[in-house]
Image (cartoon, rainbow, N blue to C red):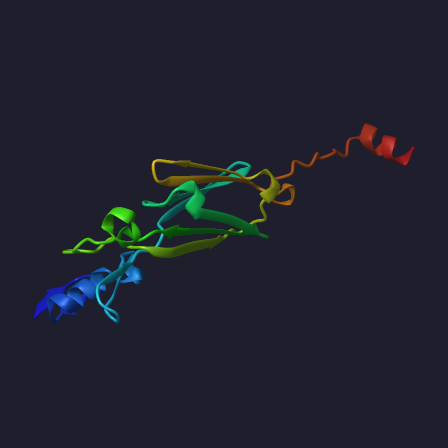
Length: 160
């Protein structure tokens, strides 16, 4: 038996791989229920700066037409579909020896801690990455409030 400081006792290779690929640790998930199929979450980065929030998603194997972006209140959802290589015309009569590429529908949703202005959102696609820029709603932007003093002139002006 192997002892790991991160995962504790590792009984065998299969258990080790299951733990390493657990979504809890940010890995992929291997589904053994119907043969060999990988389910890989759509990895994203999200950051905010100033008056906007930016979401970047890695969508390998997808094209802009394969993607759908929706915003509902302060939740951003990106959906996409990767077509199976087995469905391609040149693969119809092929003999498959290895088939590990994922296919199917993928989705990620992020609920932001502030409202956003979906009407002014902008999304671009380049080299398998989607970059979504979402302005914060006016109600989420910091407001500067003028502070008036209590000088004798200010008091006299407010009493006049």
